[in-house]
Image (cartoon, rainbow, N blue to C red; front, side, top):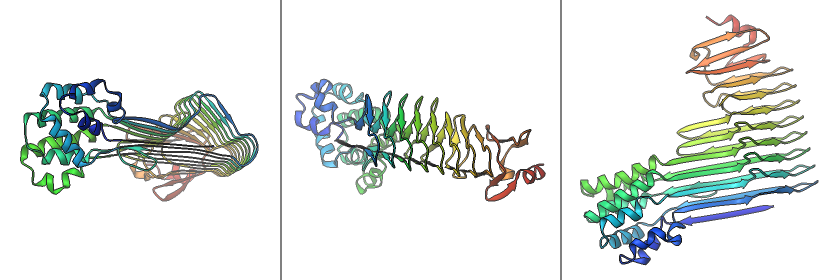
Length: 404
């Protein structure tokens, strides 16, 4: 099953140019105008049950939304606005509700079961005001056009109104949205991948020759637009399992969640959710990159019996049960947050990015419990026989002997 959806918009400037100055005020109630600055789409939107039964199954959802516009179109829109009252410009353009929101697979309050066999479930989204399986917003052409336009009261009203709208813009991409849903792949070597990317671009316009040669007043207006997008809401979520359940059954299963954002990125939001990978040598690989990034956040993760691997950063009070087997939990990609990690039976190893000297406190309690404190965050671990801290390896006894 393959679902693909892609939307493109130009912030409504094409429609604005088409209606002209005389009907500028009518844009406030124009659905065509709104459809060009408010983009929402989904690759697969499951509202019931998808069940593929036995065999090698593939479910793939891809969604993209791109908001961008040419400099010429913006220049034409500014030329139209020159013959419009400044109050009307502000009324129409200052509260656009700019949005690029995409979901690869939406399984919220629904069920996907792939049954026996080696299955694949992939949710890829690219949302931004930019491109390719992503949600993207690129306002660099707006910045450049404002920098190059003749200064006037109408241009000032135009620029300020656009900046106000872009400040409140929302750019979101979710690979797999499983809020209060059930995603079950059954037994077999199953693979679940989710990728979410958001992009917002504006400052490319400030490096143009038009901007650099513009009068200071134009530069100030253009820079206000660039800075507006910089503070817009920009969130990429690879897997949103809030209140949901993901089970991959027995077998050597793999879950890969990758989120990349200009602003905030979540690999897996698992608040109130459960992820069970069952028996077998399972892998969960979580990567989040952004100004504010979170790997595996909240809920419970049960890796089951087998030689399991979990890679990512942890936070939001997530509880990980590695189960039986020689497991490796690798948190060396970045700082940890509040979490509880349980190694279980077997020779288990925990790797963290921080060195022994970095922690504000490390305490060792009964039943192999070790508590790490750093920057107000607390990581509680039990059942680990080996610790790798910033590349240095310690046994539990060795860790105890090196504490101050």
